[in-house]
Structure formats: structure tokens, C-alpha cells
Length: 567
Image (tube, rainbow, N blue to C red):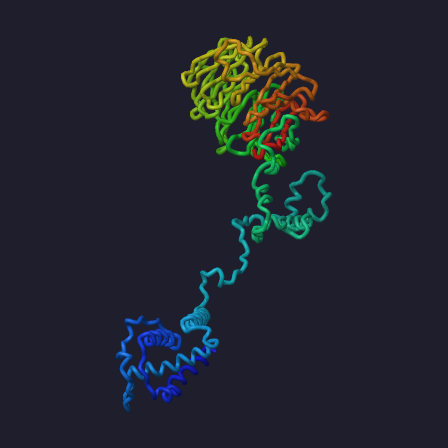
């Protein structure tokens, strides 16, 4: 259509207009300007190129002067008159004059540019870096490493290493088939269809795939809906007993004395002792499903009674019967022994050193071991060197740090609680635990300080009112435990207090969980017929998603608390 229009306009200009331009009439200024503008549009539309401005056009003589035609001469005035007829012819073709010349020219220019762009695209070769032009071909992944020895191993070689029931494996004992090929065949029989879709590294991920499902696969523990309330309800605890933390090992000893969670990694530490002669410690990946064992270390002649993480890569274990302790580096897989008799006799019955328990400050700047006769040994966890020794007025059975690590609370014989300033390393206050005969355990979180006595009574205090009196009144006394409260633990949000006694033979009364600040017991924990037998220690994960309980049945029970979304 565009080519026919050009031919028609050219014929009109070269042929018909010669006969129609014989008579000339004067033009006004307004008519002249209009014709100049239309001439400019026509010229660009017919022959391409940029439009020239009026200042670039050669101005003809004044239109008020009569136009004269001379033989052999073509003047500007004649050209102007001839264009009048061309303009009229074009206006008739543009919908009977409904579309004026500037709009018609603009539309034609746009169509022409699209056509030229299309032609240019076909002429330019494909850009190899253009993802829209290049053909995407699937490239099969190559193994990162190939063991050439695998090709040499035959099925009969593997069968020869199996000493149990020789001669009962038939043709496999003489098979020359590669062992790796046999494993692939067996895998294809067990997994119909070959590699599952989720394990295919080259699979195409659908953009519309539910992001929540992907998030469940990237986090540890169970999935919790976002609609859950931010406040823990006090009438019922949503939880589930999952796979035991040490179910892949159970070689940490007959009595589990240490259950701790790493603050930086989803890793749990389980340690214990057997017959007071040896100990072992194991690390597990905490996921609530498999809880795979990472490492396991045995300590002959070292029955473990305490332990804790020093940082993300190290943990320590101590023993009540030895005058030294071990620090294990998980990164290099090596334990280091540190003696600490301080010139005393190595015989623990006469020496001052013992390590019934130890604690690490929240900022990981101090480690405190409990010695005999109220001695507290302070160590630098980075160099594991002895820094100072503090002396409490009586034997210390338990201690805890404040959240910022600037204060330490010790608890022991006679029910005395000492408040220590760990910056200046002095005792700044001392008070008596209400109704206590002997102290067994102590724990602190937020504004709560819990003291568990030998009678099973657990008093909970408000830390803001402790320094005002030597015998402060507790805000609540918990009396559900009938024997000594040997272990106490707050969850990270200070909404749950776990109270444990290791002396009860009634499995449903050995551990209780208390809701704070209502101080009501969760009636559905533990289950009536699935209680915890002889619990020893308890601990919460860094964000409260898991609760672990060490028992004297070689197990570290693990519970998933659904109110808390993460490890």
C-alpha cells in the first residue's frame, strides 16, 4: 500500500500537475505557511529523512507577486503552485480529509520504522549472548570426582569380606560384575522411576510453587502457621515428642548428665557416664526427625558430670572425680586436657578441686567451675587459663548468670543466695531463700529468679526487689514436686519454667512445666501414660522450639514445642 501511494504521488507530481499549474494566482501569507509545512511532511514521507525546519528552507519571493512561467525556467513559485494540487489529492486519499496531513505522515512514519526494524533484525545474525535468541540446550552434569578404584571392585570381592553365613549368597560370591553397577540396579529396584524429582539437580523450578513449602524445607523442626498467637496460652501446651536426640548413638552412658544446645548452630550436645568409670560425649544435628550423629568422643576413666558449649566450635566436659577437665574442638576433632589442682593434692577427697558443675556466661567471656568449700574458679574461655577464685560462705551446689552476664547468683547449703558483681568480682548482696533447708538448683531469666530446694519447693522471685531485703518474699512458691528439685530451666522468652527432680519414681511427677506469669501448670505435660522416667537435666533450644530432657535410661528425650517457630 505504501509503495502504491508513493508511485501515485510521484505520477501526480511529474505528470498531472504540469497541466494543472498553467494558471497562477497570488497566495496569502497564511496559505503560504500551510503549504510549506505540508510540503515538508510530504517530502519526508515520500523520500525519508528528517524534517527540515522552516529556517532551513529557501524562502521564495513574496507570494503577493504574480507568478510568471517562462520557457526553460522552473522557478520556486511554480513549484509552490504545483504542490497545491498534490496536497489536495493526498487529502482526498486520507479518509476524505478527516485525517490531516501531519497525523497521516506520523502514522506512515511509524509503520515505516517498524518495517525497517523488522528487515534489520532479519539481516543481523543472532547474538550468542542474547538469551531470547539463543537455543538453550540441556547440558548433562559431569561428576566432580571419579574414583577409578570403583571400577575394579567386583561383587565377589565384597561378598568375600562378609564372614557371616559364608556360602549362602549364591552366585554373588563368584560374580564378576562391578559392585557399583549392582548398587545402581538395586537402587532402581527400590526407587521405581529412577531419581525422584525433588533430587534432580537439573529440574526446572516452577515460579508458581508455593513458597511456604520451600520454607519448610529450609528450616529445622516442624512447620508452624503464621496465624499462631504471640502470647503463650496458659491452659494447654501444644507439643509433640519427637525422635530422641541421641537415638542414633545411645553410647553416652547409662546416666545422661549433660544436655545442651548450641546457640549458633542446630547442634545438640549429649554427655553422660557409666558406672562412674568412664564417660562419653556426642554431637547431634537437631531436626526432630533423624537427629543424625555428627561426632562422638569417649573419655576413659573420666565419668562426665557437667559440660557446656564454650562457643560455636568448642565444648568442655568436667568430672566430679577428677582434678582436670577436657575441651573439645569440633572443627579439628581434638580434645585438650587442662589440669586444675592449683597446687592441691590430686586426691579429690583431700584436695580443694572438684567439678560437679560449671556454667558459661551469656557473653561467653567467663567460665565458672564449682569447687569444694564454696570455691568458685573463674576461667577465660578463649585461653582456658585460670583468672580468679571466689569464695562463697558455704558449699555451692548451683549457680546462674544474669542475661547480660554482669551478675552471678550462687545457691547452696543452708539456703543462702549470694549475688556477685562479676565486673569487680565481689559479693554485693546475700539473702535467704524462704523456707529452704538446702539449695539444689537455681535459674534466672528476665526478671525471674527461681530457687529449687531439697524439699521440692521452688520459690520464684522478682530480681528487682532482691537487694532491698535479706529475706525477700517470693512472688510464687511452686509445690508440685515431692522430692528435691535437682534441675531448673527457663525457656528463652521466660514464659515456661521447667522443674525437674531426679529422685522421683513416679514418672508423671518427675518433671513439671509452669506457665509464666500466671504460674499455672500445664496439665497436659507430660502425658499421663507417657511420662519421663528419672530425668536428670533439662534444657531449651536458643529460640524455644525444642525441649530436651536427659534421663538415666541412656536417652535424651526431645520435645517439639509448636508455639515457637524455630530452633
